[in-house]
Image 1 (cartoon, one colour):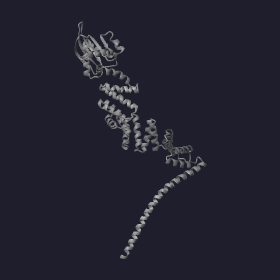
Image 2 (image 1 turned 90 degrees about the vertical axis):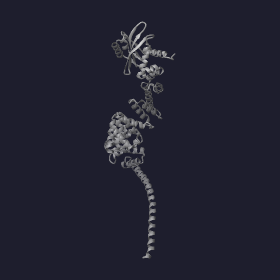
Image 3 (image 1 turned 90 degrees about the horizontal axis):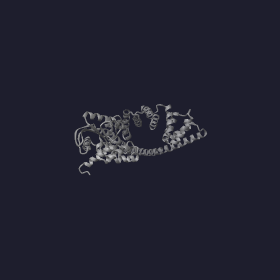
Image 4 (image 1 turned 30 degrees about the horizontal axis):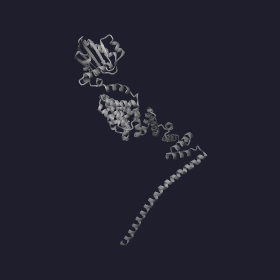
Length: 457
């Protein structure tokens, strides 16, 4: 038995050696086979093209050969050749031609070449041949979206979604189309799903914010727009929307920050840039900071002289910026406005003794001041109405003032505005004891107050 051990050991060693050789050889042959398959595939492709072209030289409408050539070019993404080949197959039609596949591949090739009209034609014919094709419905929906035909977009993409409910581009375009159809609540669910499947889709996140805004869910909208403020592409518009919401909420400081961040971005679209400047100027005006608002408004006028009411704002606030009393009259808080009106009353009649007996304020529109006036020649009770407007004051306000004069038994009324009066208002006061003071005369009164203040020259 012991004599057999060396023999068995030698046999085992021989067997292991054979296995190793087989593995190495097999591996080498495997590589040769892969290279051989690739070479064989290339030879087969060339052989197929050669055979097909030979048949076509004898019969240019040979469907089998055209199918072979079309399939090769389509798989190789040689779109121009594939499109031409499938165009011939579509023209031939009949037996041997899969019309659905020919139109579909023709359309895809045209789409890859940027030939949208031809692609749409191919997809449309393919749709009539196979209405439940995901690829056809999706592509038709995408083209209709680019054409802004959102009703048709929803129609095609809804059909595509039935076939593939989790396709992110379908959900995305469907949500965007519904938003453009003013259906924000319907759009939300699709856009949220699309974002879940493609979290880096910032444009869809921005549109979701718009959906929340349109649905009056402003807190959710603010969170999204705030998140996107720093994004290089979506940031400027996100800042604009965030600022608009904060302005509506009366949070002017936050709105200012939004618009300022928006203007720090590079390569902003001109339309967005102009609107950011306009809204920032509006915020400054709300804070009575005319000095910061005016350069923004003038920049807008320089680039677009007809933009909204910029020309009117410049005309109105340029004068206010130069006349602090007039600025206070129009823009200051109610207490400062009333204090200024008191000064005007006390200086209205030179060398007269004036005693103010009552002050009433109607919201932030006007103030009525009742005063006893004693001069060297006459004594009377005078009612002053100060109207906070730079526009035209109509007859209704003057009628109301006249009625108030009767209630307080005033002998005369003085109605003052930083704007002017309509012809109807002026006619109404012709036979009544009411003086109408317009902007030019009122500016003189304001300047006279400055001249009489201590330290004024």
